[in-house]
Length: 112
Length: 113
Image (cartoon, rainbow over all chains, first blue to last red; front, side, top):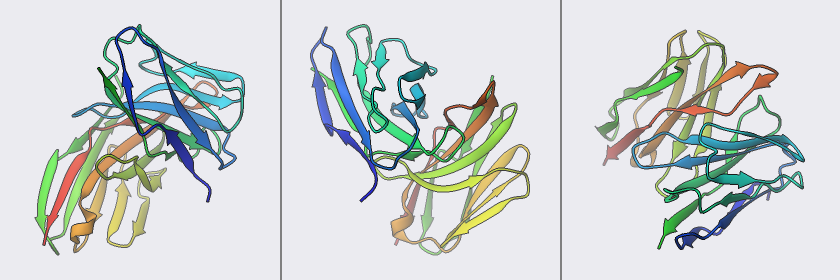
């Protein structure tokens, strides 16, 4: 089955710790995205990538980092500089930058 | 500032009671407007893309329409399984192409049997 997978489903972060969220797609999509969802707010764009080895900051990139070494993978690292990391993180992909985005199941990050 | 506003925030209907959800937007250079459905604890599920004013799309009990300033998601004779949060998002043109989506806060829909 083609789709987008995110792991883990739940992730716990200790203060001062960096954590990495995984996003993998087997849809052969060129573009990939990371969004953050908080209660009572719309999804907000963190980073996006149009092609391998290239990515751009979204609206709330501070405290986050990404890499795009393979077409099918777009991991997100939440660094210790992100002071309010508790949220639901969603990865999406699209055939190309202009096309419909499809979402993965999400990772819920909690702070211990 | 580009903005997407959805109303109402929450809506409770009886099974079979038709209604509409609204998404108004103030953006420059709209490329497309998207509707998603999101169940609790899950990722958004794609429903429709609308590109130009006057366009309409249908899927089962759902119909999406678009004007120059807003979009409506009409739900006809809803069933309890239609209960979910419905998200509206817009994509704008920028230098070199389109970017990520700008989302509204969603409408939480509950259909009571």
